[in-house]
Amino acid sequence: MVNLEQTSLSWLDEEMNSSVFSDRRHASRFKSLMQKLWQGMGNSLPFACQDRAATKAAYRFLSSTRIDEQMLLRGHAEATCLRVKAASPETILLLQDTTTFGYHRNNPDDVGFAGHYAPGLVTTGND
Image (cartoon, rainbow, N blue to C red; front, side, top):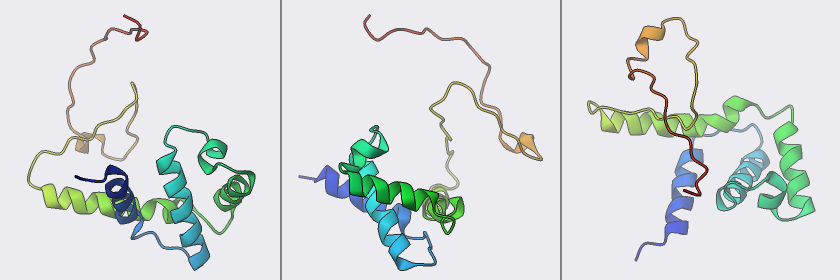
């Protein structure tokens, strides 16, 4: 039987493999923080971190001037590129979980046609 928690943590490790930090302690903190957020998905940062010290360390890490967005997203971006290359020349769907979003780029025609807007039914989930 497949251990889903172990499989998902392995996936998370693969996503972070290419992330590069100038200090190895930052890499260790990033991995620890991502595991806590993964295991507490949907929870607030303090709830996912579970104690005051871990929460303070997470906020300190995220507010550090030596950490930037590129460092945090590099591993995920490279892992995504590898998955896209492996799937080519198949069709790749880029799904977004929001109702509206925009593409602000030099050549928006590169995005492609996704269909016509059609209003949907909004329910409360109690139906």
